[in-house]
Image (tube, rainbow, N blue to C red; front, side, top):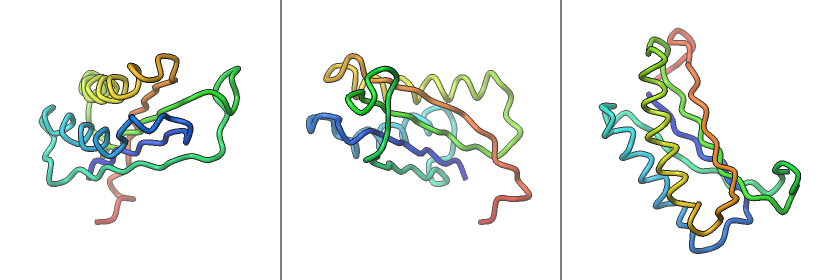
Length: 114
């Protein structure tokens, strides 16, 4: 049921292995106690974007973690920090000024269909 969605600008250098990053994110959430069999992780490469004052020249990675409602704020922060570290560690050595952001959102149980 948890979903990890990574959106990233298509100007990241080729040495950044996006597949490795999403596998790392998948594992990191599992290491925080979430059942790995239930996690769905994916990445979407963006062709159209603008990042801060650099516009199209800026690089970005944004991670969205979707969870069924009911977790408290400290738990959401714990999950978010673990995922943000993986994303940052993946890109910051090659692109130090890459904007790496993360948002944790609740999904409404009654509206989530399995």
